[in-house]
Length: 262
Image (tube, rainbow, N blue to C red; front, side):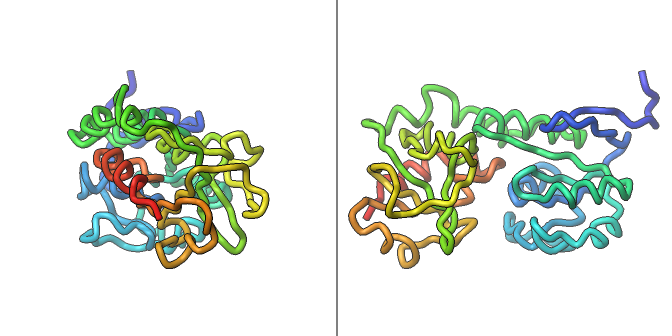
C-alpha cells in the first residue's frame, strides 16, 4: 500500500494511467459540463475554467480561454493538482502539452448516458470526492424503463450541430443515445464519422429535425427555415450534450421540447 504522501495511479476514460496526487485542492476544468459537475459537488476545488463554462452562472474562477484554444501557460500558472479534459471538447495536442509540462490531466470520453454516469462517478472519485446526491438523482432519472416509454411511436431524426457547413450528430455519440432513450432515433447513427458533414438535399427520410442551441446557436429564428417540410424541435444543447447535474432534469425537459415542434 502506498503511504499517504504517495500518488495513486488510476486510468481515465481512455485507459491512460493517471498519477493522481495524494491531496487534491486545485482543479482546472476545460469542459463546461465537468466544470458544472465539480461546482455542484465541491466548488472550492475549482481555480480555473474555460470562457464557455457558463454554469453555474455565479462561478468566479480564472478563465483560460476556450475548449479548443486554452491558454496553456495560464493553466500551468494556476498550479492545478488535476486538469479535467474531454476527448471531444479538447485537442489531443493541448492535453499532451500539459502532460509534458508535468500537469496531471484526467480525460473523459462518454459515448452514452450509461457511460456518462459512470464517467462522472469515476472522475469525482479520482478527485477524492464522495458520490454526490445529484449523481444518484441522475442515475434514477435515466433508469429503465425511463422516459423512453413516453414517446411512441418512435421518430427518425437528423440532429444538426453546425451550419456553414452543415454538420450533424453521427455514430456513437452521447447526444444520440440521449435521444434514443427519448424515443428519437438518429438516422445518421450508422455514419462513418461521429459528426459528419451533411447535404440537406441528400438526407434520408426523417420525421423530425432536432436543433440544439449549442455548439451552434440554433433557435426558432436560425435553422428551422432550412427544413420547411419537416417538423423541427429546438432543444437545450446543455441538456442534450452535457453530462453532469443537467442530467437530473434532462429527460423531462427534452421530452417537452421534442413535443413542441413547428
